Image (cartoon, rainbow, N blue to C red; front, side, top):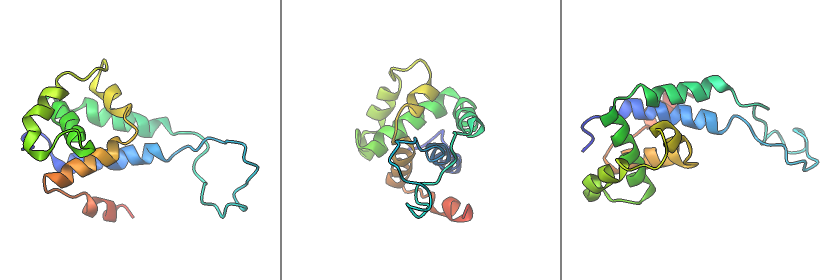
Length: 134
């Protein structure tokens, strides 16, 4: 079904999206500090724009067909469409509402999980890549 997308590239994108997603944690003024919470909430205090640029660059470097499949894969992974409804997911991807594919995908809080689940539905796994990064 994935005729344009390289699953390894999608896995790399997932890793980058997750790096960006955990970089900064807002200070909610809870009166806690790192030693009080046993360092469970210690992230960089500011998001690194280079990780964001890298994730955007990966998406923007894809051709139109790859970007279309990336959106469709996120829709399948999110549960909006099943594996057997791939052509419907592709049709929905053609009508994404944001001005760019990058803005659309980065605007989905669960996009990394959705993409990983979509890959899983089609029989691919990012486990080897995640293990290699530890």
